[in-house]
Image (cartoon, rainbow, N blue to C red):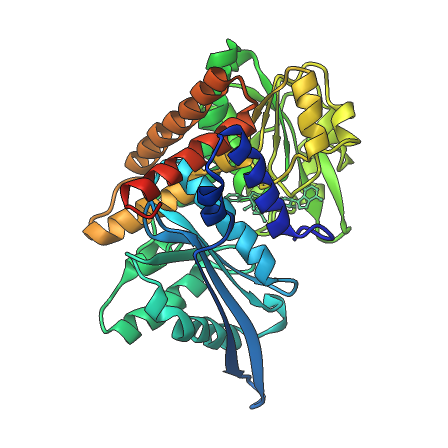
Amino acid sequence: MAGQINAFEMAQKQFDGVAKLLNLDPQIAEVLRWPMREYSFRIPVRMDDGSLRVFQGYRVQHNDARGPNKGGIRFHPNETFDTVRALATWMTWKCAVADIPLGGGKGGIIVDPSSITTPEKERLCRGWVQNMWKNIGPRQDVPAPDVGTTPQMMGWMMDEYSRLVGQYTPGVFTGKPLAGGGSEGRTEATGYGVIYTVREAMKHLKINPTESVAALEGFGNVSQYAAIGFVEILGGKVACVSCWDRNDKTSYTYSHKDGVNPRFLLTIVDQYGTIDQKKAKEAGYLIEDGEKWIEKDCDVLIPAAIEGHVNGDTVKRMSKRVKVVAEGANGPCTPEADDYFKNNNIFNIPDFLCNAGGVTTSYFESVQNDMNFYWTKQEVLEKLDTKMTMAFNAVLDMSEKEQVYMRDAAYMVAIDRVVKAMQLRGWI
Ligand code: NAD
């Protein structure tokens, strides 16, 4: 949620800036500034106590020139049409920069998922599909889990869609449970994807990964596997991770004199990413204030928790040794932080490139569903590495060719690819 800032206005503003850099025809820019299709609908649900409650649902399909729309469905009490529009727009750029043949979409329901029971959730999920089934599908629009939604919910939604169309269609939703048509490697995908891009950045900057140290914010899905990847794939050391403590309602930084052992921490973290303090202390971990992570002496910073934490204030506390900031989370760095990176020659790997491993593996899931033939985890991760490496290098080449910052270069690569697809199809 972007708080006071309207997320869609922000998405349009970012786009306008890059359209100018690209010298994009204003008429073409006008096509891309807006979603192509938008759905807003009411979902009546019979609650467990017999009452009827009506929920507000959305789906936005921003652009499908490169292939079926792709993007999650969020269950959130503060969901708005504009948030969904913004997120759908960003999905178009993320899929394009990752060079997967998909467009951008996003959906949502205004609901606090913790306020309804499991059977109510199931009816709500099925209700969303009953509204949208004619406009989604493996060749139209493929939703996935997001904030407030889970693999189990994707299972119910896939079942409802299959029932309505009269045939088993696992490829209509991704992020399904493994036994229900999900893909191996999806759990590791986003974090390992972050590490593949960090590895490429290090090659470019001639940094020896085995002598490098990383500090991470967060210890949820992305951060866990980014930390494991930093140690096991790159051979580097992790100085610290951090997390939000659900019991104390504050955040903490966890470090260890010999470096963090992410595989051990994985055994003492709950499903919400809160580390067990007592067990960490017993294992010799130092527990400090949640903002300490940004001050640690390291070469690579990986903010992988929530948006806006690397900002005008915190960025000045960064160690002077930091050479790379890899955005595992969505929107972790503010424009003020970007200015600091530019002035201090810090290499940034922008979020929609850095964390594209998740959507890339969702795409692999659809491909496997289509073939009805499934790859091993090793095959999935090898294909992911190839995709992430190619995406990183396309952005780096653009950045060097046009002498622009990596974030602008990523937008330029993405927008250029979408425009080319629209031209090829004769839309513009
Ligand atoms: P998650 O819920 O699994 O974990 C979030 C982690 O951040 C938890 O450890 C939590 O304790 C911590 N956290 C929350 N607030 C914090 C705070 N104030 N200070 C310190 N730590 C805090 O989430 P995730 O799936 O790892 O996603 C993290 C980010 O990455 C989000 O921005 C998400 O949108 C983005 N992302 C995730 C994926 C994916 O595949 N999971 C893909 C692309 C982008």
